[in-house]
Length: 378
Ligand code: UD1
Image: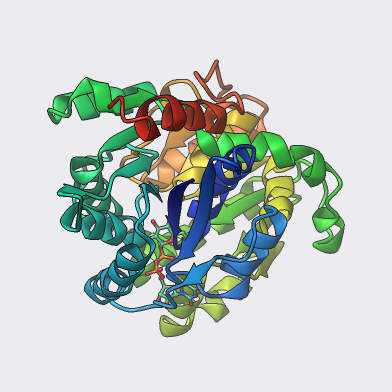
């Protein structure tokens, strides 16, 4: 029996692991899949709710790392995960995305020798680059990709980025977007969600907002600029609601900068706690448009053909710009207002075909794991 350990830590990791967990369960006579949760996200709404809704078992091991500076979070994960690896002796470790937990687990495996070789790591969602080293996630991507043994890539540009960094092609696999596997799987459930009723909003008559990047929310003036965009929505169409589920980091900043009064001035604004996976999917699918700084939401809106205005200067997911419904707006207020006008006038950008956004990514990855990795062919 082979043993695979998945390391997850924060909200976007859970949707990437769920389809793989299900696919690996089909082979439970050959492989044991254990889940290690680092505890980077510990709030119920950011973690437990996702495990429940995605049909995942409770993590086999929870490292309970929690918050801290980047160094503290990474170091504590490394110290605790090293003990797990030494005890469990996995045949393969799967890491996901670009969070601090991903980086920490990868470094640990690269430095532990088992039978004279490092513990093999496969990186799910490899190859993405924003080329912006001010983002902590970009550092995590670069280090993880350079140390991981196998790289599972979601979009074509990711392949180019990895070839350009000199990684051998036999270790790189273009498998598609695994988060879309989850989306396709849970869309029928999302159609039955009651979240629109609960929030008293109607289909295609609200903008959905998510913000948590330090560049947007950790600076008061940048945050105030975003609130002025909300007021523009009021001006352009007094009818359109704004729904804003607030990330814990963002709440802290609203409190620190004393922004509740400013938020009160925005009409038709509903603030809520972070929302679980299925209800959030329902909110995205039924929205008029989305304003976000998230990575995954750029992909989900593109798949669903929902106009998405991304408040970042760059994206590591260029397919969503080239072929999807995503538009990079940075903090350019004029651009954002113009794009909102187009959307409200019925002239939104439409998505084209998105390669390997087909719900079969987990299947492709598991086939490679069995045929090539666990069999020792590469
Ligand atoms: C992390 C990831 C980011 C991902 C995001 C999704 C890194 C570097 N960043 O960002 O890539 O897009 O998750 O949400 O790994 N907090 C809570 N409760 C929680 C979790 C966090 O209150 O359950 C607070 C922390 O105390 C901290 C802040 O939120 O002040 C940020 O948390 P952290 O895990 O450092 O990064 P995120 O901003 O969530």
